[in-house]
Length: 565
Image 1 (cartoon, helix red, strand yellow):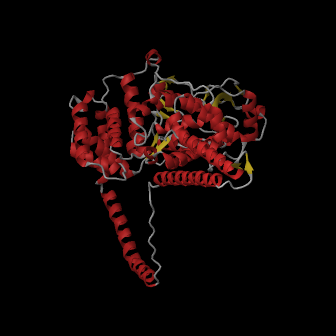
Image 2 (cartoon, rainbow, N blue to C red):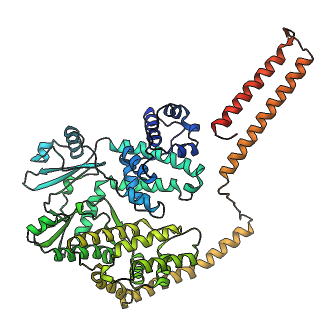
Image 3 (tube, rainbow, N blue to C red):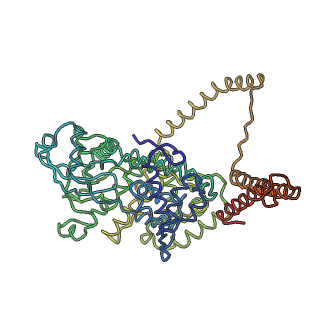
């Protein structure tokens, strides 16, 4: 289990301080010193920051800020790469140009030596490697930030793929998460425009997401659920999981060799029908999204391969999306309203699918949706790519500070990815036409007798519960009022910066008054020639003047360090 705790002034160990210094130096290297200054981080790591500030700061002036963020994240390591990948799916938090750059993040790192991997396998499965597997190739098939994948063979002869968590990765990520939480806390306290997005909550959610991704037992469970969902579908294949050879740090699954869906030349050489593959690939994502509500959230070409007889095989089930029935139905309404060029219905559906703290300006929102539909959809429908259109629409909603549920954006992103692969195999493929039967089925289920009766029974139960509970609640409220136990709690928000500024002003004024008092008092002592006398001047007066001079210089330095007189 991952452990995430708020670190103290400089952390609990030297490792934290050293890693903190490394992170800050990378931020400075890519030109984010202004952000660090706004965080007032010298209060927490004055020594470390002073050491960093003496180094030469490399500037990538020709690069955009989004490109510099992506490069900094790549250098920061696996936890930050994962955070960047997750933020690339959050248009409600990240501007479009940053999303485009963060989407380029590659989860690929040099592999760790096989001797370390051998120790992990033997410790997790409590047996020697030779006793568990007949053979394991020492060169990994893939090496990512969290795990490495090896090809092996069981004593029974079956070929397997063995996914092993990198040694020491959990401790490294825990340290990074603690530092990340500390930085998020400072951002929430000192940077108003970032505080609106609740960075502490984002880091906490990210920690929970990363914890799930690092637990291979959950990935194995996802694979089994997918296999059950497509048990009767002979066009889809999910590799078998070897549960007895899998733990939270090791996942052993069937090794499947096929043609990558992006290798069009190999598909043609194998004599496979590209249109048939396109239809099956589209059906695969449409079934997941509209019928199951449980979908593969990263169906890029590297996670899809083609087997004989046009069978599609899926890999890597670490990133999964789940959408409830209501969200699926609203998503269908969104697609229909966009395709039918119904601006009003599109706006209403967007409001149902998103969340917001302040109600958006309806007039401006409707105008932007009208512009979007006019620019994107007034052409033959077979030329319209519905996935990219939906992504643009969600970006539009994000500009109006409407928060999109992460799973909804993942669903749209998966939809767009599969549509892109389909167009690569068959440029004439019409995703909208293929989706129509699924949209009809979802709408038909909403008005089926079984659904209507189930909804009626559910509403009846809620009403009955309300009728039973209401008298008790009213009695409890009356009792509290009678006992005078009602309390009104007021919480101020957004005053921290103002109060901090007020404190600094007060401190400087107090300091200035003390300095002035010292000067005036020392002058009176010198004039009155209060003993002891040194060279005809009162020694106490001299000491007072020196103290005032030191305090004045100290105050001046403090003001200059903040960059303001």
